[in-house]
Image (tube, rainbow, N blue to C red):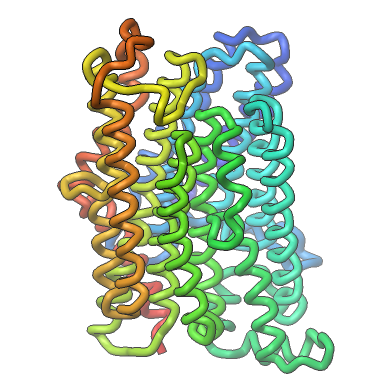
Length: 518
């Protein structure tokens, strides 16, 4: 399998398909969507093949492809996957076809729309498999452009402002990333994430930055802290972490729901992935020094976004803030692990529990959030675009399948035992209570508020007296049920057997813990 170059093929197919589809301007809406669904099915097959041949018993990189690319700059084409990467590849391969299918027939520039979706998928695959900054950053930026145009061309009435805000925020973060990595490359001569991680753990990165990068007479430790903050900014904006989150509610609410499925299900994971793949391994000392402040930011992200979601009356804005809340748990786990403060087997077990929970939460949130926005799309299609809490009522009586399936996704988001959302949050809190108990205790307020606003949603939309306006509202069609079926099945499967995912990533987590422990 390693010689098959499966990762390069996995990334190339949606990229090439996206460009071809965008050039096929004469395609009808049916032809554009059919082609996009077919092209997105190929990466899904390859991702399943990748998973089937992946060895979960080792934390080492697998399916590695490494070639000298630009010799004069020492730049390599270096890709590979471990448990973290393959989980994100599988998520991307599942959510993109869901989004395409949920989009329906895009009558206006359908070939351009679906071509941009495939380009976004290719950028995501590249981001989750690249292991050298140069071409990782190309894919990182490549994912930004399709998302910007998908919001701007097909979004709601305020789409231009929202798309511009999204672009500016993420571009500022990208500039911070670029400057920071150029400083590290100048100091070390390497763009390789593994090499930089080894230098960061040993302290050589700080020494080399102090020798090479002279900024206002700062010491090597101070320069390294500035570089850390540049990388941190890039990932904090993408997640987003409080207070860098203000672009998200408008972008999610103005984008079409299928586009929001991609933004929340996949693109938000790029930031969390960056924290795990890059920030934690390369800057363990800086994360430990700033751990108290970082944990406070995670707690604020969880609690403030939960209260913000509770205050919303628009379903998309409610789920947008809920998305920030759920990703805040991932950051809580990462920052607690990075705080250090202990060593030995018992401490390592708690760190591994928290990181296993983070990886599981990333995958579970991607599925659940994508499904929720998919249901919002179905509701908008039936109501002429309405999506307010006060616009409905009693829908369970006339659309029991719709309400039942959406209710499953809501309860999964709530963290109900037996559904996929529970295991990830449980593992995160299990680890964080031992690593940073005060942060875990404060964050539980977010769990309570989340339960309140999600149960309020169920009560206001599904229960109570039927709004006479919707007496003829149709239930889900067979096609719509098929769209959400895979995600729903996985919610139950991962709820009762989370080892299906944890077993895939545990050795990678163990290796990550081993590397960051003193």
